Length: 251
Length: 323
Image (cartoon, rainbow over all chains, first blue to last red; front, side, top):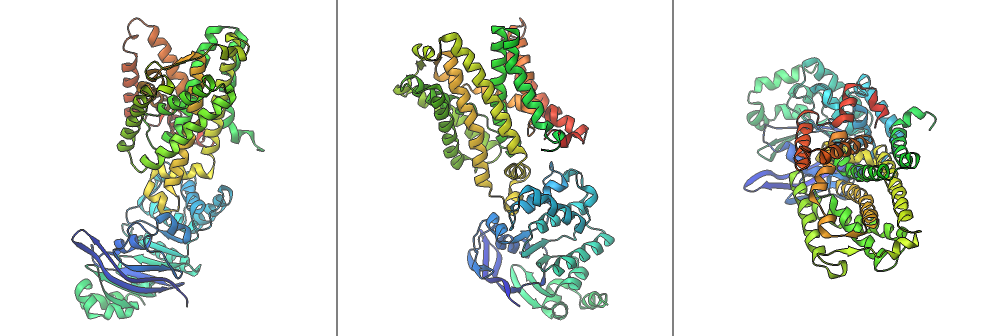
């Protein structure tokens, strides 16, 4: 498997706050990586470093073998990186279709409006927004807005997709649907990093996991390894019995 | 192109402007032509401002600076260098566009109120600069050499020609506005208006897109300024850079509906109509601008989308017809 993304010793500070300390990992193409950790652990900061919102103080980020540390967000989008936001960022006064077309128009493949409309239709089918085409984004509910964010990111036909808490705020049946959608995206060959607090879902869906705590990378491995890692259990899950229960639910 | 209904958003505005352009000839009235000239000028300026204000979401409080600056440059070349009116119009548009390009690089990184404040400062700074430039006549300004009118068949002919050029500029501004609105570039601008950070994450190169929107919104105002000063026969700094005219433009765009092609045109009509009534009324003639201010306040409070925006929100199918 080829390596799509390499994070090498990335460190990010906000004044005196050490948000990320020497984070290092490789991500292979076609994988889903689950990124977990308590609130304030630096997960979203790591996303922001990868997609160019922040420039890390130290370390390097390589995307498809090229050094992209400190690239602008729009340059990262054009290289084939798309993301969703923890707090949804819909283009409120545009329709669902226009929102998704914007993703297709300015993303990696740089489509014209005509092709973008076709891609938007296809993606709306895929994420289940096909009945909302002409509705304003502002009028969607939270679950639909999350799907819209995902649709917009997918329409860009990215190589790497960063999903920031797409399951937060969804009810159990919506979570089930969203997990299926994430798996379908992986099956299309798109590599995914997902930040998630819904443990059962992220353990279930990830090929590989990374745990952050206070900006430190405390563990990395398969979901089983993570669930049995004493440090993770202590720092994050708290209760070893809980971990067993979570893994047991997989079957 | 197959379905004319899809282009109603362009056809209606064009019919309005063409109607305005032929109305004085049909009625053979000079006062009708003066009225139509004022409305066409407002249409051209408001439609141009809409590209920045309505599509991109950047409030330019000092947009009249392009009108004044382009006008000054154009009139200088017409009057002092003996250029033809066409070449002078061209240089007026180019210099206004160039000014916007340079300003855009400097101030478009500011957002919201900070950008608006900067545009006011630029207008005032430009007024002060021109006031002190001897080649532009300083505080006295420039007076058109009447020989220039002779080139175009005398004053009456020249004024009539100025009217039709103004109609042409109004028409061009509408077509540009429509083309931007339905283009990929326009979609990028709308995305910036809605959420600039999210737009950049999607791959929209916001600094470039904003700069081009600013340039596009400045070119026609520069030409309009040149044409107006040509028709007026003179130009002075305080006539060229009136801050209140910038605010009147904002009222027009907001009144008609920012971010729509038809909105600024309706707004220009309605505002000029209201202004015509107010300045001739005994009660309102001295407080005409206060009334405009009150109107702006009421629009922002109660129908922030403007007339066309309100209709679009009320009747969803209109969305497709009125871009």
